Length: 135
Length: 135
DNA sequence: CAGAATCCTCAAGGATACTG
DNA sequence: CAGTATCCTTGAGGATTCTG
Image 1 (cartoon, each protein chain N blue to C red):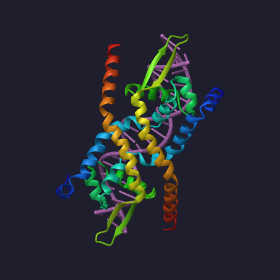
Image 2: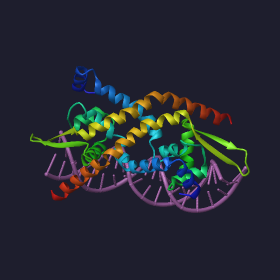
Image 3: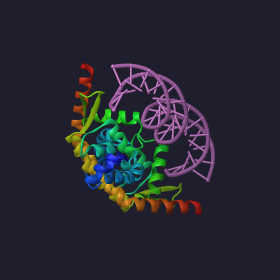
Image 4: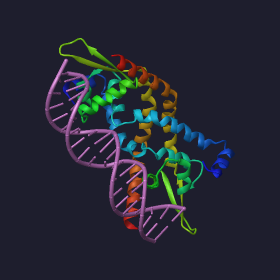
């Protein structure tokens, strides 16, 4: 950080620097959970455990491999559990963990923001593109 | 959606289906704002407007091109404004908009979750990897 | 100083097919 | 049914250079 920034940050108690540090620490975690399918899968599993192909059918557009990868990552992160059922042929049931559940609330807040402001973003884009074309 | 799912969802008022639909509508918006740098830039701009290279120095690891692209996207989405200063040589100042500010709160909640549960995720990974190696 | 244009590579994610 | 392995495409992002 440059000296000017240090002085400025010192004057304000280093607020921005602290915020950036927090964000930097949070990012590795967010990267784990913010991919295309993670939250959709958690949403499906929230009301009740489901098996591989049940999840796949619910989600619609997901690939076999993408779902397998996502579920493995979720299990590794402790957000879902994986249980092999003693059936024939073999069946596997996935269930959400308390940790996975706890993620849903903050994420829904972000989704709420997205839904509320979707129109503003679109308007801004239209205005921007129109100005671009005119200029 | 398959018939079984329709029946299940009807029994619960289609809660999961609705949640998935909301998430699907929210995703395009989230994709715009959830990239590597967007939130970091907004954090820097939050206390006061800054110029291109000021932002760049504050962020540290970012590339010239990456910052240029990110700022353009932010401007297009109406999250920051871009003002050319009548100086010599030319200077450009970026400032956060109210819409951009409104994004910070929900995002900080998510960051809060990430910071609080970072340890649990790591523990889960360690346990998973150990079990994997043993089995 | 800010930004546009160009080139490059590298890894995520899809399609397919095989195994237990 | 669930999972793994292989191949392949594509595009995001970095490095570099040029301009106003």
